[in-house]
Image (tube, rainbow, N blue to C red; front, side):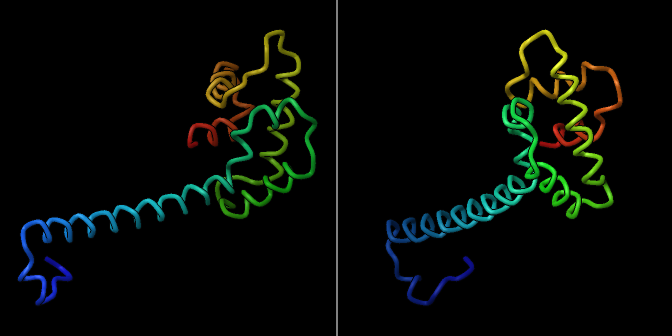
Length: 131
């Protein structure tokens, strides 16, 4: 087994199982840390789009516009920040005109975007489908 030392050869069965289990647990812990780091990175980039209540129930502020610009820096070949911000504003106007209650979770919002049947929210739809 990789990482075995000469002294490991004299381990009892219980000690060998304990050593292997600790090795496995260390590997699992490292993988969880790595995944958590990646998830936090994704959340820092896209998280503001998933907070539908804040995005559509409150007045838009400069923070949303800045986060759209920051997001477009990472994915500059896919979309532009001002376009995403404009779609958010357009979608907010469309939602304001709805008679029903505003969608609360992100999945309800994605359903609304898709059911509109129009291509005007294409960038928003793509973002919500990815995340």
